[in-house]
Structure formats: structure tokens, C-alpha cells
Length: 471
Image (cartoon, rainbow, N blue to C red; front, side):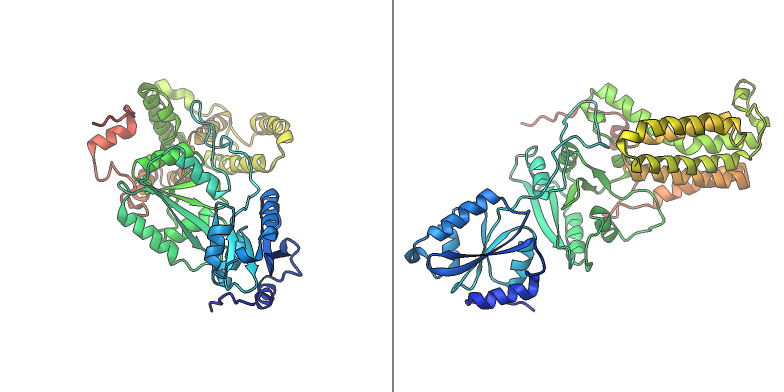
């Protein structure tokens, strides 16, 4: 039920105490002061306000002459409050949300509204290059957890009034801010309407995991398909490029990355380095990434098939055969190493930075040398799995890397059970997973391959000039 702000300051103070439990929460501050000749209370969250600005405002409020204080709250805020971002709130629901977001709120006796002064500042880290989305050449800035700074990084790159940034709020408890960034004359209007409606209709308590929670709410498709439905980036230049292409970019407060949609598998595999180098170099990098991506799926299953059928190995490729005694079947060696590699990844993530190097050396010695000498693994198995492990890092998208891993595991299992027919069946299933996956707009995940568009398909592999001239 909506509660309007009353004229009596005591009633308003009592309501604020009931809603916010000010006596319990040490970081919610109630500061009594005089504005003109009237009693007033200033509410703010300690740690979210700029102390110097708030001190100046309090000094100004207390120096106001009584005859200058008007009865109309809007006139008071518009004329007498010497600050850039000032708003008038009429209900306690609005007041509570704004206050807990960091806005300083002033209640004055006799005025049935609240003067909201947005002098907040959030604790944040510096705008530095993302650890995951590094480039050899190009911008070195990256998104942070503060929403307004992220929008400013995009505005800095696209200086046109056609760039729109709509803010929405979702989450009954979290009241999470979500910004939709797009160009008015290029965005897909049906997609924009679809995303806005789904966000506005969300009935969740909070977006606990920020963008992942939002992604699961927006896309209600087949959960068992591991291929990612969204492209994520922590680079403002990549987000700006997506907007200029007519895509929709979603920013979520407290998240240092942007969601770009719709996104096909070719969009997700693109990287900024493809465009920061000349067309020839960019094309080479892109083709290499696609080729290595295919190898990460098929290398170990094809090798397993040849080990199960050694008579199929051509004479010139006999060196790929296992030369030593096999104590554990190759299929189980590959599965164990798949799990071991993920275990080492998780260990590296949770290892303190000053211990990463010595532990990496220990892991390399134990897994690389002693594992072979002990008879658990063969050298050839270690070699191919080492290549696969390193090749996975060629994919900037973490989810795509794991999707390729799951496809590889599927191929390994089917090949071990059904031999060549298992590999063929696995290949068909991989194609089915890709072909049946859909973007959030319902488009093909393999566009422009399906439906085929020769010009666009060529551009996915061969980088062309980026400069577009106009009359």
C-alpha cells in the first residue's frame, strides 16, 4: 500500500523508524537540523555520500532565512537547493528505495514531500583493463561494478543523441538497476520490446548473481543445451561496437560486464584483437581461433577411435600410436585428465597470487612426469590433453569453452561405446545442439550459416575494412 509523506515531521520520523529500524542499523544516519526556522531531518547511508558535499549542503540549509523557505517543496528544491541532481519524492516507498540506494533525503516540517539530493558515491575499483578480455592493442579501460561509470564509458565512445539508455528496476528486495543501451534507429524493436516486457514482468526477490540471474530469467529455453545464449564483455569498446551494429547491450548494477544480444555462435567467438589489427592479421587470428576450436572438440575422440582401430592408421602416421604399455584404458585416461584439468583450474582460481607460481610448478612436475612414470597415464595421452587444455584458453568466452568441453566428452563416450558409429552419432548431436539452439530473439544460433547468407558468412571469417564513408 502506498503511503504518502505527511506534513508533520514527527509522523514522518515515526514512519521512517518503523520502516528502516534506525536505532538498530548504525549505518543509516538520521541528522536533525534547522532549515530556515523549521525542524528538519536529513537521512543518508554512511559510506554512500560525499562528506564534503553533504557538509556544504547542511551549512547552506541552516543558513537559509525563514522568509525564503516556501511552502511548495518543488519550488524549494528547484530554487534553493544548490546542487545538480535534486528530486522531489511524495511517497515513503520512493523515499526508502532512494535512501537505500545512497541518495540523501531531507524531510522538512510542514512540507508534505521529501527533497532527494543525489550526492552519493559508491566504493569502486579503478577503471582498468579486464583480466579476462585483454588485447595486444587497443583501449585499456574496462567496466566496473558501478552502473553510472559504465554508462559514461559507453557515452564517451558514442556521442550521438540517438544513443538511448533506459533504466529499469527489478527484484522485490534488491531493487537492482538495469540499463538497456541501444541506438534508436538501429535496434531491433521487437527484441527491445521483448526484453523490456520480460524485465518488467519479473517476479523475483533479488538478482543474487547479477547478470547470470537476469540471463536465466530472460531466456527460458532449453537448459540442457550448454552453448551460451548471450555474449558477455568487460570491454566498453566491444559493447560500443555491438551498439553501433544495432545490438542491445544490457548493464546490471554491481556487475563489471555487459550482455550483448542477440548473439550467435560467431558473435561469441569474435574478439577485440580481430579488429585492432589490420584485416590480414585479423583474418588470420579469426581463422586460427575457429580451427583450434574445432580441434578441441574432435582431436581426442578421433585419436581414441584410431587407438581402438590401429589398422586404420596410415603408415606415415604410425607415430601417433601409444608406444608404452597401457595399464589403464585410454578412454578412462582421457576422462580422468579432463577432470584433473578442471581441478587444476579451480585450484588456480582459489590459490593466493603469491603462491600461484610455486604450486603451478609442483602441479606440472607431479602431473606431467610422475603420473607417466607411475603407469597411470601414457605420454601420448598427456600430450593430446595438454594441447586441448591450452587450446580452450583461445576462447575468450568461458561458457563457450565449457560447451566445447561437454561436446568433446559426449564424443569420447559415444566413440568408446559405439566405435566409428559413435563418433558419427556424436558429430550429428553436436550439429543438432548448435542448430536447435536459439538466440533470445528466436533467431538462428548459426546465422548467417543457417539460413545461409554468403556475404555475411564470408565476413565472419575474413575481416574487412571497418571504416564506413558517408555523403
